Image 1 (spheres, helix red, strand yellow):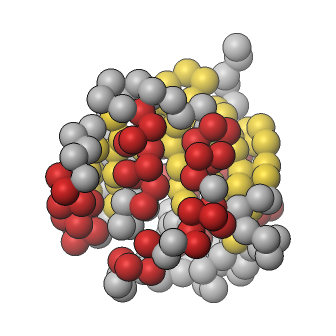
Image 2 (cartoon, helix red, strand yellow):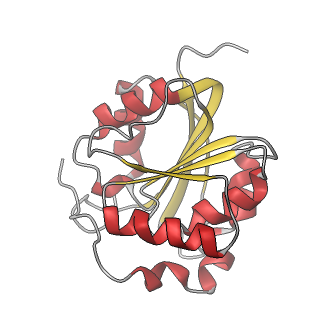
Length: 193
């Protein structure tokens, strides 16, 4: 499928004050079950916009892995986490097909406006599933599109996730009022409570 070229530009675009209002990070974290003590992976972390919010939520007893394939972005997140006094953030220079997360380590994973850039989505999702604890949730927020226009139809995401061993457990469209964005929540298909 077509993909968008990974964004390598100025990080300030991710810090627009309206982003909190549009994306509702606390609601995202509630849906993904992110709470004090959780271990979270932010794949495609960019500026760390979600990373720092999750780090505040999980507190000193939790960990947030900021995963990106861009070393400059991870350097920015490390500097930001020190400046904001967040010692619970760990940066990981991932690969395009592997986030390089520790096995069975995370309670929740988020790919925020990143999935349309993933060139090998099924391999990436399989590796992500290996890092998820039993019952962990995977959230994918993106917008509908053709793949090469910084969006990807949600039906494509659901099919690719199924091929990687995930089942869709819920979906939301609250992330923006234009109804272009979607929030899909998955769980490993072999999960049984």
